[in-house]
Each structure stands twice: as structure tokens, then as C-alpha cells.
Image (cartoon, rainbow, N blue to C red; front, side, top):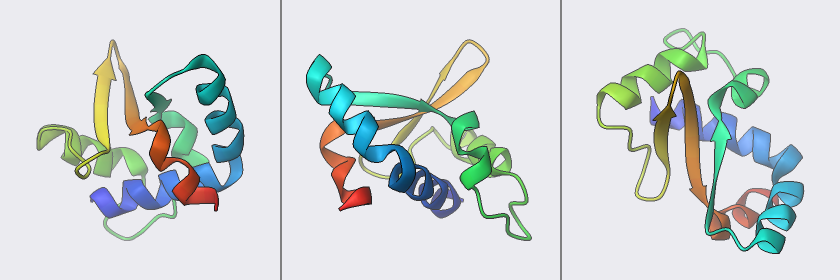
Length: 93
């Protein structure tokens, strides 16, 4: 389940990573939160996970940890992936 989310995030950051990284550096942020809905079009459906929210809900129900550095954060009715800024270049370099 976490791999599905990480793959969609990687696809998203290949397109938007440089811009996000640049903005985050200028503002001095240590991490950013990316709304999961931004990943919808970057998700590659599988038989088990035709929609990314199925995987997201499974991870949330298991504590929200995707891996050692990526976590899901729920605010109000929205879900975000929190990623450290220093990890972003790994996706576009």
C-alpha cells in the first residue's frame, strides 16, 4: 500500500519537484505537506488499488507512516503527505 503512494508521489515530484523545492528553500521550510488529491492524476491504478485513496486510508488506519520519513497528516477533511525538503531532489535528479 505504501509503495503505491510513494510511486504516485515520485511521479508528481518529477513534474513539480523543482518548483516546490525552490519555493521551500526560499521560505526556509524544513518540510512541506502535499495534498493527496494532487496525486490523483499521477496514481497508476492496480487491481488492489484502483484509487489512491484506498492505499491512503489503509496507511492512515495503520498509524499514517509511509516510511521512516514520509507520513500522512490529516487536517480537517484533507489528507497530506509530509515530506522533508531535503528528500525532494532525490525525485528529480
